[in-house]
Amino acid sequence: MSADLDLTAAHWIKSSYSDANGGNCLEFSPSHAAPQALVPVRDSKVPGGPVVVVSVTGWSSFVAAVKNEGFAAV
Image (tube, rainbow, N blue to C red):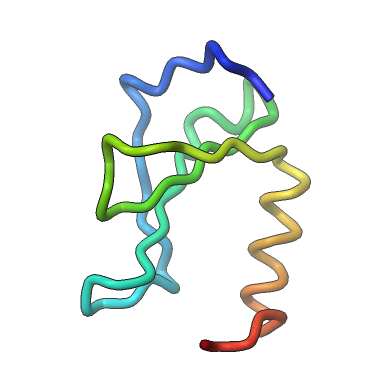
């Protein structure tokens, strides 16, 4: 999407669906969603690791699927 997206000052929010025992931790940065229509997503256990950047539309579809239990638990 955008190789030059600056996330140094990004505010990250941990998903309410994340596992409280330290597993399956997902964070997203809503502060970057509006201006670029992009949503950065990362693993909260590896904050300095890679970030996946998806479109706002893609993120909204993903969140709706999770809320509607569209993904099977493993």
